[in-house]
Length: 204
Image (cartoon, rainbow, N blue to C red; front, side, top):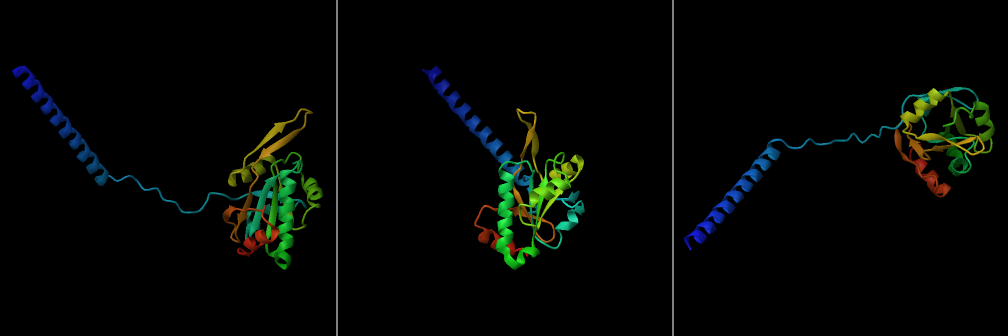
């Protein structure tokens, strides 16, 4: 009988010691958190999109990031052999320019090729003749195109076709830049043209 009582007492003492140890660990942890709070993560609110580049337009004229100053810009990356996404985006941008009416010259739009091997200035000039004349096509050497792709966080990849030709997978985002050349946000060009134009007017 005394052995049973001793065993129960031992269990009680063990449980008390375990509770005390747990409480000590908790107090220590709280003290460490109070004394050494976790570092705070802050944000400047500026997206890391955009930067210096050196390309040429469809007339062969040099174009740098300085061209983005003074007017809000819409920028789309694509290629002239694109079967659907690129012509659709350019058509939508043309419709927005039409909806802007007399304010169309207060904004600018750029079509940047991700396929410089085929998209020469002459090729861009012919291709863009089907869209609004205000849209400027930009191209350059593969190295120069890689620079602007990196600055705008654009993905593109050559995809071989069965006939020996190739197409391009690429980022299909319209970038809105303000008059200072600073990235604002992705621009939804798939809305009714009047609605998209009304938003763009806010940055004129």
